[in-house]
Figure 1 (cartoon, rainbow, N blue to C red):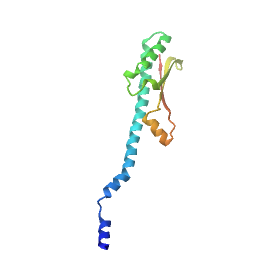
Figure 2 (figure 1 turned 90 degrees about the vertical axis):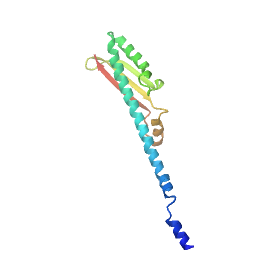
Figure 3 (figure 1 turned 120 degrees about the vertical axis):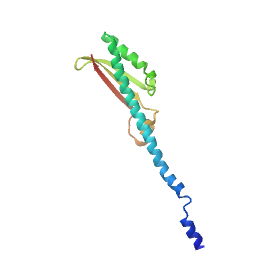
Figure 4 (figure 1 turned 30 degrees about the vertical axis):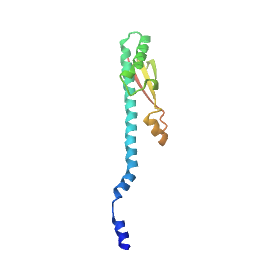
Length: 139
């Protein structure tokens, strides 16, 4: 009987399964973190690009009031150029500014609710409800 107990204790048949069960949650957490981090930076980069392109697009108009309209129209059509940004989640503000000369400032805000970042925010309590980026172009 003692010999049988010793041979049972020395067998390693299920060791790989136990190690896998211990390591799998850590690997999945790392993978999910990479996906969320990537989504956050993809959204932030797209917002910055959209703000800069909208400001540049407004230069096509000569009248100041028409420049704001041109930038707003460009932002409204952003879904075709930036598919990662859902149109209902992007809010924007376009204003003429006179900081270092006349110019235009485009500020975009993206609501992160329903995204993978929002799921991680619920677990970690980071309180990142939105991403905001802006661009200023002097004429």
